[in-house]
Length: 452
Image (cartoon, rainbow, N blue to C red; front, side):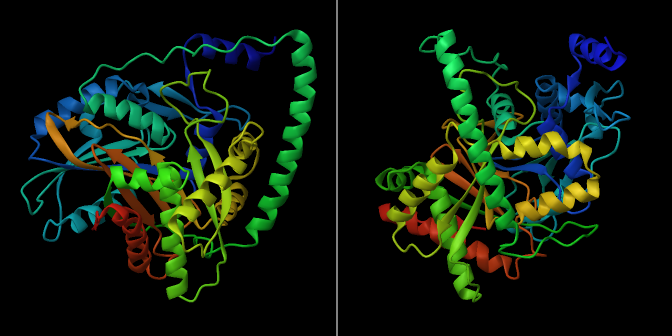
């Protein structure tokens, strides 16, 4: 047994939290110069939140997610991934901040403050997250912002942990694997495996060829190299019931309806700016790879599966747009779909950061927008005993200039649009068109969203 192998076995046996290849990918991109894979959540609370309750609430939150009390240990070689070491000097006060929002304390001021805070680098040698209690709102209430590195966990894992804590529930153990229809015989496996492998290799080759073509067809310029990352956040809210009704009527899901609305908003923006873009390319993370329901994931880390597909930009009928999205998703998210981002994550440590960052961002920049959907609870949540009135999850902009996230909460879909103003010439106009397109779907039941 080699020394390296023995060390790896000892580390695993001792319970060391080693980053997965996808965790490591986000960690490397975060240390670069042109993208910041930071996840942000903003809550508007129903009342003023006392500081002491805010601090105590985070103590329970950290107890349920050990990476929030650990720091990253970088190995000396690219052939080994970083791991998380418990921080003996961990203190909540190193991560929590009490601030007063600037301006007149409007919702727009809160979002602008959040965008500014999100781009401040994390302190080195500490767990990469911060929590902010925001006061000074014009209605006398408080807001809450969580900023956390994507390397700690992906959005779905954070949502599960965060919402359990916000609902004052005890962390639950991972669910037991569901019952299966029965194991295949040895002969069935011998026949199925080569056939499935050949099919997947063929699909992977087709995917790689298409990706190389797409890189040359970027909707916007690649984000420039810069030391400051400007972002612009917009929020809108639509009632869940009519939005879901329209999705079902089009033969799709709420996520399909969201994609259809955002695509239509982008098309309106292109028309207004005289941009010729007959087809739109979409980047969409799913919670897990297809056909992996029988294997529960760890409560931390990154387990996403990226789906990418194209859509007709000028489809005027909303229900047909939803149907076309459903067809496109089914063509990209299936049993033979290649985990292309997983493959990129595995080879990325072998490449110099500058080379990897350039190639990675060029591939991401070939998409018109990134889009995520996270189902949330119907019951009220609280932070430190104060209920949240609205909750917005904000996905990072990584190469693509527009990232849209839907988080359902109670009886509304809370949608955030994160725009890179260094790439999008008129971010206010694009956000308005996306807002209007979401409203067009909601108005089928005579509901109207509001944008900030």
